[in-house]
Length: 117
Image 1 (cartoon, helix red, strand yellow):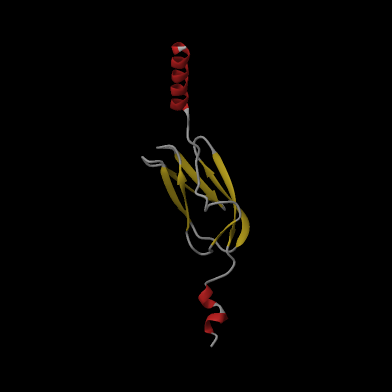
Image 2: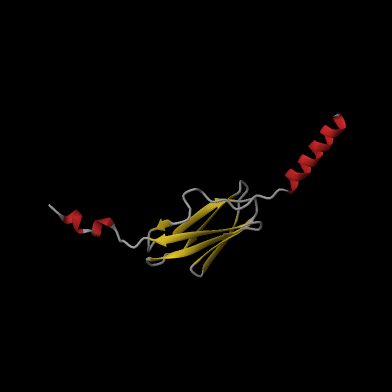
């Protein structure tokens, strides 16, 4: 019996050493998200320490590397209203794709309701 436990522990240890983390996004960055037009878009998440991460959206690509605690962050240039568009996040071990819409309205302060008596 002790031999079986030792073999299991060694196997579990080897599996943990070879495991690689996928690129992970926060829940806020999900399919069908709406992003305000005309402002830089902040995309962030987690990956394995030192993993290269690439974010592509409407022809613009930004790359970064996950820091010592696995966090990464990029800013994409602002674009005009429209959609749906595909946001692609790629790491060394995985790729994620999200559909997003750019908000079609401007500032709420420009709305006539703010000027009403």
